[in-house]
Structures are given as structure tokens and as C-alpha cells.
Image 1 (spheres, rainbow, N blue to C red):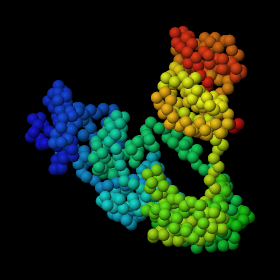
Image 2 (image 1 turned 120 degrees about the vertical axis):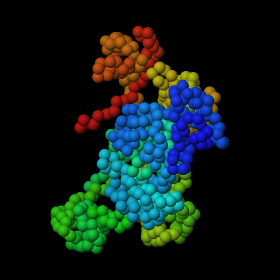
Image 3 (image 1 turned 90 degrees about the vertical axis):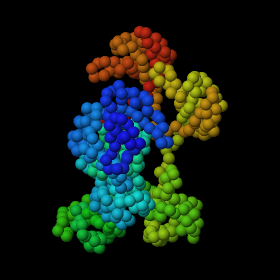
Image 4 (image 1 turned 30 degrees about the vertical axis):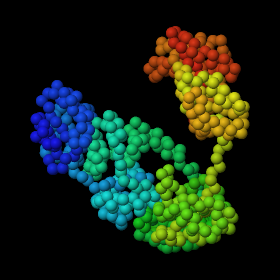
Length: 585
């Protein structure tokens, strides 16, 4: 199809390579709507074309142009409802039609790695065009994009570097991908990004300098850096996941080391002490990070070594302090951890490495899709075999020196609850029918989760008197009840909230109801507190809580569920227990 085939002015890219889309400037809005109705969805040369009115909001373009002033001319015209000649809109042409080099995504990147170090490491395998570490508030965000010269080089670095360890972190290296379904959803909130997403979906990318952060992520679902998720929530989640640390009794942390210092020179600093290990922390390319660790044979030597703090070595005053280590975990007597395995290694090949020992299990850790993570575990029948296997440390396998060390004992699982979680419950099922499903077991409670209106949430919980009954009940998984196959699994203890023994939650409260009227509803019970939840302005949130003096009154109050007050049927259900406050709060 060419411009001559359409009577109106049809604007195509002027570099001679069609990008698969075009703009048509119509004489009036009536004609524009007519062609949309007539042509949208028709087939042209075997393709079903999409014809629609293009819209851009002024407020979005203003916000966008503060960051990207080079796009000003194009957005100014878009907001007036027409488009400039394509040859004038050079930024958009470059972005839409110039096929750029493939981009590789690096995730879980240590925050102290520089772009130069990434370029050097990637350059060992293929030619690098550009490197960009994503920044958030001026600090590294933990991931980066690398623009490679060609797709072969991009695939090569993915094969070589994906899953390797950098400064104690296992990095992810993969081709950046963006899916069409996401781009349709995302520009509804951020229409100014629409053209960039079109290019990603066609398999090529705009210049690296254009890629904004955090608008793009490697994830097909924009969950990790969603603009709707508060940074405080992300930080809180990271803090909660960190392993608790304590002061080491034998290790020290030494900072501000000269970058040209070798390990031998570092050891000489502590030659007057009995040390087990002296090591400078380094990047994969061998470059010093400027700090290191020393482990002593005794706590006495550790304390004496602290006196070297602020002493000058190599023209720098070093900092010496007690090192923090993860809470001591018990080392296994029969298990080892093997890292730096070739990523193409199969489990059978892994087993052959330890064929001279009596093993119970040899397993390579893999992702959900079966891809090797580059490490594995071996469990032996005896402690002697475990100790002998440590001699394989630094042995070369397929060009890689494997690392063998004693594994930690797996953390004991928390005592399992006697509750189960039941999903896919028929919508119309009542609590009595739900209880009948488990009538052959000794249960404490069977309850379907419901909204304040009483409508089923289609899942529920069952608590048994014994762990044995809980295990037997799991056999009902995928059994059909009421035309549906229910799902049965052990309830998540960590995320399971505890029901209160004395509090209830009351929903659908009339908007104009005052606290005094609310208290009258429960005047026949002994209550400690009756309160309607309100906004800061005093406006009712239309729900409230009641705390009773006894569990018996709480249970009787549940009979008020669906009773009508001031023209509304209130919802009454057991409330969750309030979180316990720390003594320091």
C-alpha cells in the first residue's frame, strides 16, 4: 500500500523502510470516524489492520516534556489533533524506524558495579555498543541494560554470564523482552510512552539514551517497579527478607584499602596475629573493592587487631571494625554445596563427579523451566565421604573450577498448623454444606470466607483437632462438590491471620448512623467498645468494630448478621486479632 492509494495525505516514514504503521490526516472529524467504522478490522494483503483515532492528553505531554524536551515539537502537534510532516519529526522517525541493536538485561546487579566494569566483562565475549545502569533517585537500582552489536553476541553473553556470581550475588542475564498485552495496558496510564512500546513490540528498540527509568522493566508484568507500588513498601519488604546479623567473635572488616594492594600485602598487615584467612573483596575481573575481611583463630586476636584502626598503610588510613555475620547456622555433617557448575551440565554428569563416594542424592538447582542455576547439592551417606569430597574444591570441570563447601542444615520448618485452605468452593454453597464435606473428620471449625454483604469469596478454612485428620483431608484435593473440583492445601501459617475471640467486624452501616445509635444495636451484650470507623473529616467509612467482654457474647452477636437497621442489612463477622505491639512502641 502506498500514499497514492489513499486520497488524503498519508504520512509514512521517509527513510525508505516502512515501520508497519501510518498516520492519515483527515479533513474533518466526521470523515475520520467514518473511515474508522468502515476500515477497522479489514484484511489488507493477509493482515488484519487496526484503524483508530489517535489521542494524546495535554497533561501527560507536559509532564513528559520536562524529562524529554527533544520530543516537544511532535507532542505539541499531537495535542492539537494533527501530525507534522514525518521528515520534520526526526526524533520520532529515529525511534520508530531505525532498527537498533539487541539489548541485554542484567538483573540482581551489585550496587557497586560500574558501567565500565560491565562493558569490560561483556566485551570478553562480544562487541558492546552501550551500557546503562538504571538509576533511582541518583543511586543504582540493581539492574542494567547492555546494547550489543548483534544478536549472536547478545545470545553468547546470555549463555556465558547468566547465573554467574558477582560480589556474592547471582546475576540474571537475558534478552530484554516486552509483550504486546503489557503495552496495551500500560499506556492507558502513561500514554506518552505509547510510541516507544510500539517499537519494543516490533522487536527493536529506541536509542539507549531514550529508555526512561523506571518506565521499562524486563518483566512482562510491570509488578516490580509499578508506579502504583510505594517505594516504602518495597524497602520494607527487602528489610524483612534480610537475614538477621550479629557481631562476629573472630572476624573483622577492613575498609579504605589501597586499590592496588595485593592479598599478600594485606596478609602482612596482620602477620603478628594468628589468622585463618585474609581476603580482599574483589570484582569478577579481579579489581579490588577497597575492603576485605580477616578471620582470626581467637577472639583475643580479633580484639587486638581492632587497635589497627586509623593506621596508615599504602598512603591510606584503614578502617578496622568487628564484622557482622549472619546468625550462625548449623553446618551439615553429610551435605555439601557445589557452585560454579557449567550451565549445560546434566544431573547425570553431576553425579559422575562424586561417583567415588556413597551418595544419597546429587541434584543441580534449577529454575521452574528447568534451566540450571549454576549450583547444586550433594548429600552423602557418611560424614567421612563429605569431608573427602571437599578435596574436589577448585577442580576444573568443562573449563570451570567448581567450588565445594559444606552446606548449612536446612532451617527446620515451622510446626504445621492443623488448618487447611479450601478453594474453588461453589458460589452458592452454605456453611452447613461445607461442613458436610469434612464430616468424616474431627473438626474444630469449618468456615467459608465471605464479604460484608454475606456473598461467598469462594474459599474457606477448616481447622482439625489433629494433624492426622488434616493430612487425610488433603486427599480431597480435586474432588468434585457441587459441580466444582475443590482445591485443598495446608493453610499458610505465616500469612494466616488469627481470629479474635471477642471482637466482631460490622459492615454496611448506614452512612448517617452515629456512635450512640451503633452502641444501641449491641445493648443486650456486655461490650467494652463500640466504634464506627471514620475518615479524618469525621465522615463514616460505613463499617465498625465491637469488642465484647466474653467470647459467648461475641458468638451470640453473630446472629445479628443480615439484620436490618435504618434500611440496611448489616454484615456481622468475626474480626481478626489486632497485631501485638512491641514493648518499645
